[in-house]
Length: 268
Image 1: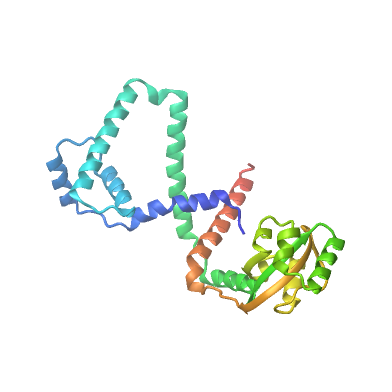
Image 2: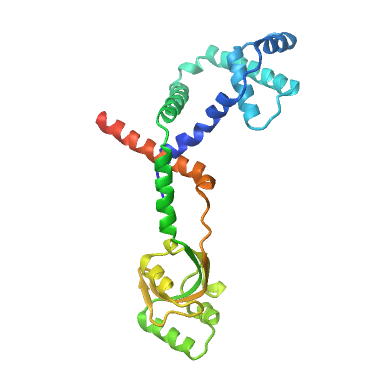
């Protein structure tokens, strides 16, 4: 329903810093004691804490083995970075551009995290969007099959054969041009009306359960003969069940609007 790719990507990227913020910091005395036991270190305690929180937020237990592995990794990284600087690689065009981009990415994530925190989606807006989606889905679901053909005359011929007793599934396999359903006898499974284009859903809702449409139904895809096999009450998830996904989607929309306003303000 939304294509705000940049906003969604940034929100996804924020998951890691958020996890960092929630993870409890190790007591300084404990960190210092472990560092003393490990020998010389070439990195700051803040860097160690950030990596440790990253790993534990991904489900790794905080163990002496994990801390030792992180210390070894950070020391190796720092030594390699020093060797790279000795060779002047940090001054080369491509490398410097990538370093600048990486630094900018961290800064952008921090700013977006701060902006999202300061601009949460109001609960009332979330409920309003939920109600709109719920109304669009409707209170019924339909188990439906169809036969899609190219012309109205072909559709009328299909209906005539059905009226003579031909089996719907057999005709679908033989004549339907819908590659996604013809091999399944035209079966489209259970769906809400909102999942179909309007002419199709309108005809589906009006059809009697267990009956096929007596007249061909035209959409942009061709001509349909629709069979409503069954009807049931729609199973709509509760607000609390979908609230996290809904909040993320609406936050992405909110961010995308802010991005557009920011670009317009700066003439880009």
